[in-house]
Amino acid sequence: MGKAALIDGKAFAAGLRDRIGAAIADLKARHGAVPGLAVVLVGEDPASQVYVRNKGKQTLESGMASFEHKLDAATSQEALLKLIADLNANPAVDGILVQLPLPDHIDAQAVLDAIAPEKDVDGFHVINAGRLATGGDALVPCTPLGCLLLLRDRLGDLSGKHAVIVGRSNIVGKPMAALLLRESCTVTVTHSRTKDLPAECRRADILVAAVGRPEMVKGDWVKPGATVIDVGINRIDAPEKGAGKTRLVGDVDFTSASEVAGAITPVPGGVGPMTIACLLRNTVEAACRRRGWKMPDL
Ligand code: NDP
Image (cartoon, rainbow, N blue to C red; front, side, top):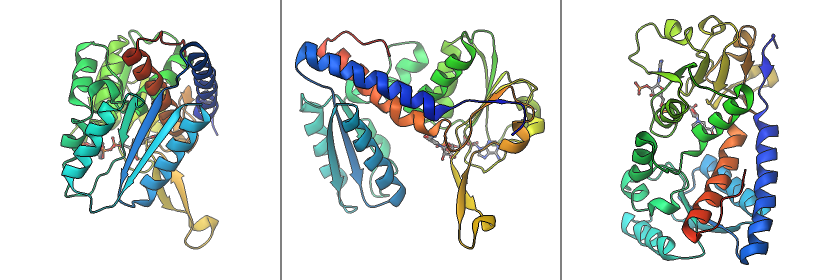
């Protein structure tokens, strides 16, 4: 490791989960009820099964109610929409998360847009995306929200900083750009058609990589002292660990970037653990808004 400070997302997420746990105990004492999160999984994608298991486990550990719905891969879109309608109408359910990807025969955006916007704790509903873009009270997608919390913790006031985001997906790049604009950063969003990506990245005080390409962002793309947030989670072969072994790497070449950056998130242990912690946070927020409770300070 070079001279960059390590941004410990695992520790920050653990602290956030502790604060959420305390807030839920307090809400229970005041109101005699706890927030509830429903997670819907369609099919047997192994990575999705792990995510859903972890979400359910951490929801229960926080003291919230967890409702898990595991549906067969052949479930029709109609049946899934019926379940969403039931969850929308269920007063014990404050947050609804449909694990992506959905099977090919289902129109994912139609399903996401069927979730009541006030229960859309993933923040993927077009109403929440629109509110975020126009400065309204949105539920914000969990991964970019996690990145923002890490940046605020590290840098304090972000206004006037030049943020460069690599990637423009609806779940990471675009909401990240909207959030950083809301913080009064000067924001550049780059993508696969960007000309001279290394030069764009070198202008960044804050560099967020959300590309899905292992170790693409090199140390000489990083401005000295910049804060680097690596959202990527890529599994690559690791023959040095033995035949058939793999390891996780980010979208940033950690070895070279950490020689130049001021601070950097590792993979694993950086942005990854923040995502579920922010999902729990969004569920508390959704519950407080819907039930008229005062939002705790998290
Ligand atoms: P997408 O595949 O939806 O988007 C990737 C973006 O990167 C696109 O905008 C694409 O550009 C851009 N891109 C691809 N190749 C290049 C290139 N060579 N140069 C510049 N830009 C490029 O990915 P996601 O946003 O869903 O995810 C990004 C990464 O973050 C993945 O590694 C994913 O696993 C990880 N992730 C991690 C999460 C966490 O909890 N930590 C949660 C979500 C994602 P274009 O639009 O032009 O095609």
